[in-house]
Image (cartoon, rainbow, N blue to C red; front, side, top):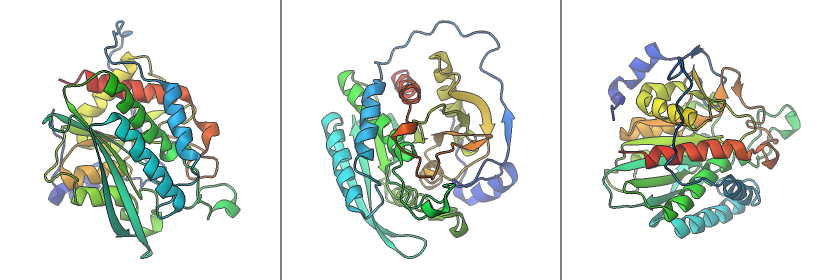
Length: 333
């Protein structure tokens, strides 16, 4: 795996001249059309990974939403966290709860809980797959200003990503892998506000990056999922992902297209956004990409609104993401 990691000392200088940032609450600044893997129709591809059950992933999404908004420090957050831990314990070899206290941009103390599920924990060859599991405390992009201080159900952002991970773990238990997989549910990703800077987001991954659950933890690469269950989702090739790990992006997108998901994984490069993958990469050196419903038209209409509920979750999208990631890890050399 070619490492696209840029040392932290040079990262910011390099990035300022090479990519235009869009924070996770901004629309993309630029895009360019990338060539597809081939100008000819792809040959028939023979899938080797086990079947990803979209009905199961939809159920796991619904279970999280049924707790209500999972805002860090809330009773709903604790109950949902307990459920996530119990589900992963059914399928993973080991589950770790990383608990800590961090401060929000306004000084509020947040009792965070990163949840790590390990498969084949002794394997040196590892892949990190992650998503955040908290809900945004405010629907500040809602078209109705009366909703701006209401927490959101966050079915897509990001119960969908956690659901995909749980279903992947369930499937892997039935067909063993030789490599190691670490599923990480990051907490307190969605507390940020643009006026308080990009570091006001992604508090759980920032903490984990500085305090990994295993000393000197390493993985070959990481894949972040954020908003991976929405109707008619389109995943552009996010800018920082292309900067950090272009080979991983190309492998994932090519695999998705071979499996028939070319309408979902599109060969269009987008501007960079601040998301958990940024802190995983810059704090640990693990090149990590972001699969996120984000194109030249911006985020989906339900993003950071009260409409982020089960009505916008599509089993076809969950299937496209989950099956693609299973195929990626089962073909890992």
